[in-house]
Amino acid sequence: MRKPVVVGVDGSPSSLDAVEAAVREAALRATGLRLVHAFGWPSVHVPPGIPPWTPAAAGVRELVDGTLAKAEQRAREVEPHVDITREVTVGEPLMVLEIESRTASLVVVGSRGLGAFGGLLLGSTAVHLAAHGHCPVLVVRGKPNLTGPVLLAVDGSPAGERAVEFAFAEASMRGAGLLALHVWNTWSERAYEGPGDPLNMVVDIERLREEEQRLLEETLSPWLTRYPHVAVERRLVRSRIRPTLIEASHDARLVVSGARGRGGFTGLLLGSVSQALLHHAHCPVAVIRGEE
Image 1 (spheres, rainbow, N blue to C red):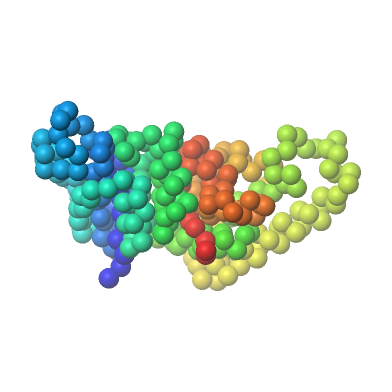
Image 2: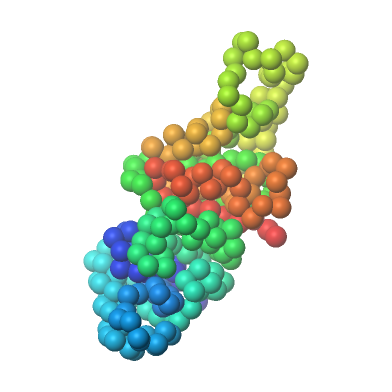
């Protein structure tokens, strides 16, 4: 049986948007949808004096059931033929979703929420899941261009190979084109460049550009053969990496990024580019971890 798509549900508008995105992903994958609510104190508001860790107390069980019922109704309105299951778990939501990711094909969360799933942009839920999850993580944010391409942030790192595979598969399932964008610079976030840039006087910029073009072609080559029906646009840009990718996300239906890049900070669990996209992209973002 295929692994389900898991979505974190808390009843907020953002999580309901995540439910819609998750059920569409489940339909694309021909698999089921699992609605998960993590009941962690104080993830829901209960009257003073009620002992923690008792979902049945003070009508909390009814509140949670109502939240999940609303989420299920929203999902069935979007994709009525997808098999849907519910799960209410006592535990810290971050850990619950991380555990759920071990048996999921994809974990989906909203960009903002209520209670323990709240404040994704201000907190650590999305970053934590992207860094520690055992499957791809999709953060639903912004307004996707439903006629736009899947945007793949190409970094050429071995850890990014799974992101490339995921992006091609998503484009194929969605019947969309793929924009493979490789942004490069000798100094990743330098303030300026141009004819007067001192760097141009000490390195062979054209040779570097050729090397980056070769890296882009080699990254895509195996997947072009496997997905010959996916229309791929290759784009090589010398610029500041994070702002360029964020700007490109305006016209995309989905951004796909690896969790790590080629920089010297290989010990970090989530790279700065992935974090920037999670916080500022204009469409949903999928972060894919590579091999450990």
